[in-house]
Image (cartoon, rainbow, N blue to C red; front, side):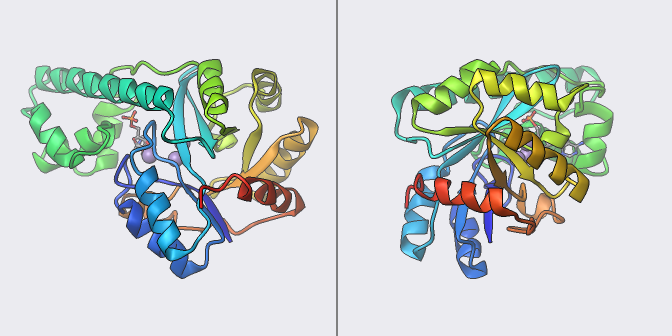
Length: 276
Ligand code: AMP
Ligand code: MN
Ligand code: MN
Ligand code: MN
């Protein structure tokens, strides 16, 4: 059992890195990775805890990159003490805060009295994202739920949407590789594309090395299709739950249990890149 896609309180999950690692140890997860959105803040704590709990841990991050909307690239096995990686992450954090401020401005223009301080409080010191603005809107009674806040105000079609500056595809792949990591396309089913097979072919030429073929939202048919595309492009295959804790109750740790030979081989390879 493995789980290579989980979010902690360093991004928009509700469990601390230690809570996630302890749960993985209890479940008997044989390889785990916390892949927070655009931040590596959880990594050192996760490594330490995994060492204490004697479980295998692979460093991780999930980068949001520019592509007709957005595309997510997972990086595994990066050296999380690398100064360039740290400074890019710092820049992304500043851009996120800037964007959140602009969303709050728009929200206030629409007559809803939330402040950036409210949003910061909801983020509890972690990487600020739209989910925290959603929480502030719920708190002040402007939305029934986080989902409601997204539909009405924060989603791409919402009334208070503000675009965020993102890294480019090649820039992201380059950064992951430079720091010793493996770039993997996350949840390909959720990628907006007319022809996902040809997009993955293009990503391969840009340096992508793996495909998250096993993902809860993928049907058995989807998994089969992505395994075939991975094989065609000589890509590693990964599996992850996209665990976020209580904000996404259906995606439990290691809930993605399907497997096959290509995944087993890829996991063997990734094991060698484990930090502990
Ligand atoms: P951000 O990174 O600030 O753009 O926020 C994106 C995050 O918001 C995603 O990682 C999701 O966890 C969450 N999210 C996106 N769309 C929705 C939605 N419709 N309902 C609830 N959460 C969402
Ligand atoms: Mn998320
Ligand atoms: Mn994602
Ligand atoms: Mn994710």
